[in-house]
Image 1 (spheres, helix red, strand yellow):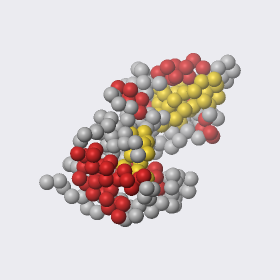
Image 2 (image 1 turned 180 degrees about the vertical axis):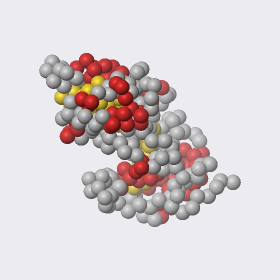
Image 3 (image 1 turned 90 degrees about the vertical axis):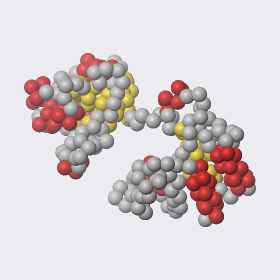
Image 4 (image 1 turned 180 degrees about the horizontal axis):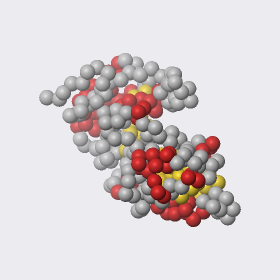
Length: 274
C-alpha cells in the first residue's frame, strides 16, 4: 500500500517547482516572481512517492472543473507520443474536450522535458500534450546554463557556463576584474596576484570546493572552472549533509574545455566579460 504523506508535504519537489514558475510571489525578493504572481492555486495531488494512476488524474480534472478553475496545468505525461487507443487517453481527452471547446477552461500539459536529448526519441512531443485541444509546453533545453559575452581586441565570443547552485551570480561588478590562471587549483598554483580577481582553474584531482577555497585563501572574488574533457557539468560545492548557510562561497561556474583553453590563451589580450 502506498505510504501517505502528511498534508503539505510534496515528497519530491517537482510540483513546488512548477507552482513557483506559475505563481511565485516572493516577499523577500520582489524581482523573483512567477508568470502570474496573483493567481489562486487549487492543488490536487495525483501521485504518491510509490505509485501513480490515470484514475487520480481524471478525478483531479473533474474536481478542478467543479471547483470552477480557469486553467488546469498538468506537468505530467509520457514520452510515447499519442496514446490513442488506451483507456487513459480516451477518458482524459473525451472528459474535457467539450469543456475546453466551450471555453470553460484551458488545459496546459507538458510536452516533455528532454530538451536537446529529445532528438533521440521517436516522437516530438509526449502525451497527453499531443491532444489537439491542449496547450502544449516543452523545455527546449533541460541543461540550465548562462552565457558570458567575452571579447578581445580581435574576437567576440559567446561562452556558455553552468553556475554552481551553491554560489552567488557573476555580477557585472565581478566581471570587471581581470582573470588569473591558477592551474588545477593547488595552493602552490594559486598566485598572490589573484587577490581581488577571477581565478581560472582546470577541473581535476581535487573537489570543486577545495579549488574554490584555495582561490579564496589568496583573495579571489570568483572562480571559473573549465572541464578537462568534452562537455560541461554543474559544480557542486557542498556535501549532502552540509548546510549551505554554514559554508563560505564565492561565485563558481564551469565552462567547457574548449572555452577554458580560449580563456587561457586570451586572458592577457584586453579580455572583457559581461
